[in-house]
Image (cartoon, rainbow, N blue to C red):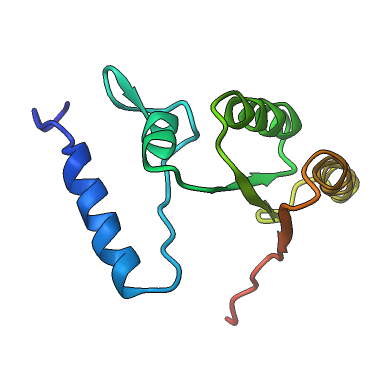
Amino acid sequence: EIDDRIIPIEKIAESTRILQSRYDVVLLEGAGGLMVPITRRYLTIDYIADQQLPVILVTSGRLGSINHTLLSIEALVNRNIPLYGMVYNTFPKTDERIDKDTEEYLKTYLNEHFPQAHFWTLPEIVLPR
């Protein structure tokens, strides 16, 4: 809207189809969550549902992340969107105990409710100086 342009949903879909025909795996990254509007009437989750895409949720140990993650999962279930997996991002480090507890909670939740879904822990990447 700032640029006074409309995001062309069909162009995104066509570009995705082209990439899928060329590569074994194509990852599409959303910006900010499932319920983020792409247009005034079309959300990221609408695009995912329309394109029948599986989802990999990315979460962390920040305050509120369990709530946000579980609400996102509920939204996926509500629209019959498959949860392929979850990435637990450990960067940046906050509180070691909270990070570990949140990771274990989400891993257990996923295992109990979505045993087919994958769980990956993304470690902190330390760059050489």
